[in-house]
Image 1 (tube, helix red, strand yellow):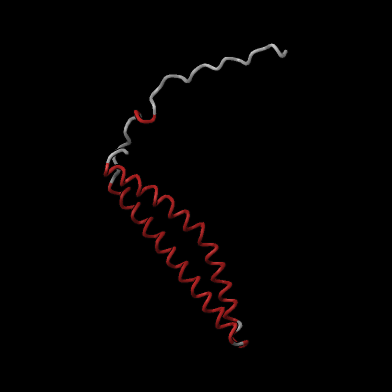
Image 2: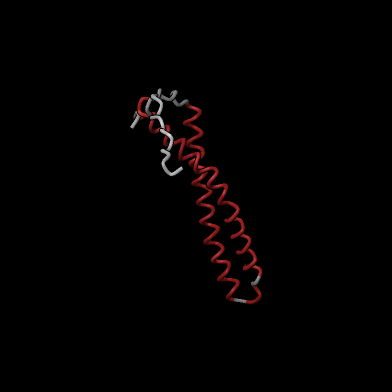
Length: 112
């Protein structure tokens, strides 16, 4: 058994390389519009998340300053929960927006 050779693997089948692939169809106006909408929406969500983070810190400082303002601490925790829940939404909106915008720019400038 030790004298057996491993099976010969044939070379890759001939075919078009990725550089010679057919060009993609042109990007439509609706595609460009949705790319911009998704990127702007992701920016708004990121801004709201940053504002919620700052507001939660302010609420924690107010809650720590006086024991009668303890409810502000719970509001800060609720804001943190909102931030955590908004992260997947930000990713779900931002990643396709960036990919679509990149494709629009590549279409405008030509293949790299």
